[in-house]
Length: 428
Image: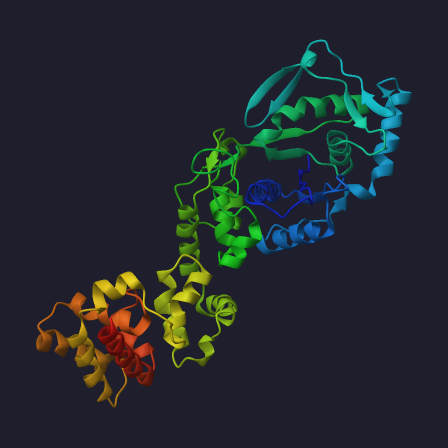
């Protein structure tokens, strides 16, 4: 049997993290079995569905690397099909008209058995099911009815979706049986939860996928992190989608809700950034640099500066902001760093202003010599030298090794910033 899976978002909003996790598992399962991954736009809600959301959803899937194998279909273009199927059921005596709407007759005897590849076999008593409206009085179809018809039309074999859809499954099986379809395999995924173990929402994290792109997270890192939400087969923390496809098995999907942790995403993103080739990372970071008003191509050692700074932040946006004061003058000092390290370091700043100004050979080696001399001449430990200088030169106490930090700022800027810091020390 050729496997076909589908991701069926509703364009009533942007693509959210929980939806991406569902799309990922559909994609992985299809690719694992050399099957087909499809996307269907479920836009029957005429009032809330918007074309801009359809574009945003497809852009998001494209960015994250989960592109469908065929052009997506839209349910709004298939209303005539749903209407025909509804009236076929009326003709066959399996549905009836109720004040203009059409309802499916539910067999209230016995139970409907749902065979789920994660949760096992679950029986739902039929007496708890009402006769389902499948076509409203305005001839618009209902969610469950469209869902079943389109899954059959698209030759879907496995329906992979969130565990919150599990109670809908017996209703859909009733529709499958009434229409005479073959039916489907079901795989329900644990819900994505916030750290308080409640369903993920905006109060826990940004739920819109593209906000993570805007913040500078890598698509491969987002997928890596999402794969671990509800699935575990490896002790590896960092892997690619291709590696995941090789080791993925349905039986390794967990039943318990999976907690989304932004710190976890930060860790995974840093690891993927560290693995990137220098030229690829430069291209990605430059997008954020331009937003911040500078370019590393204007720096005499831009590649080296990026290499030293890339491990000091969680994402591309933060890397760019971390690099920014090397090229662009900053407005003010971090108050805590200033008070703790710079406010009482006048002698250190004066020493370096005087000695760096004399340097003809502006190199890491010559700067390191001045640092070594300062420890002896000022009789101070390295933190009492390095931290004040970092704050004076970058406005903060965090930077790469000190000689590299000084070298990567132009000599003229270094002397100017040291002089400015002395003026601020005197004023405060």
